[in-house]
Image 1 (cartoon, rainbow, N blue to C red):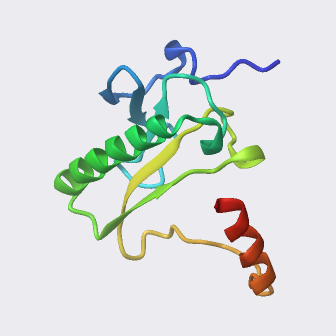
Image 2: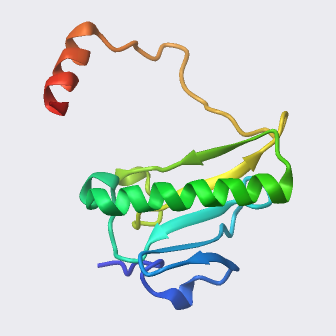
Image 3: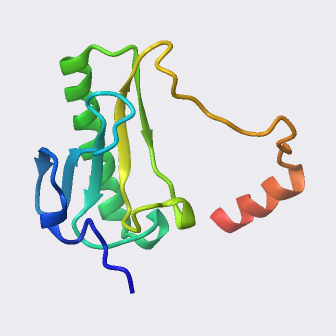
Length: 131
């Protein structure tokens, strides 16, 4: 089994910008823009749906603080907060990307022109699962 790079703090070689009992935030080693921060829970989880609600709420509150600090520090045109799950989580430990954004910074969404729109039936199924 591959060891999780974020569960061993020695693997985090960039500057830590925030820490408390539950979470750690540090600069990304491959940033999209200067100020790109990764926010992780200290306990190992892969996906958001595995975490207790209280931890997700805590990470959301910390991400809000990080956004405010990035806005004051970098004066960006905006910001992005995103998280990849499942096999798209290339680290294997839940992490939120939080980074300043600028017009024409080159970051964007790429998807095929034939992406299907969700159907009413699919929306109904999801609604039932969320009740």
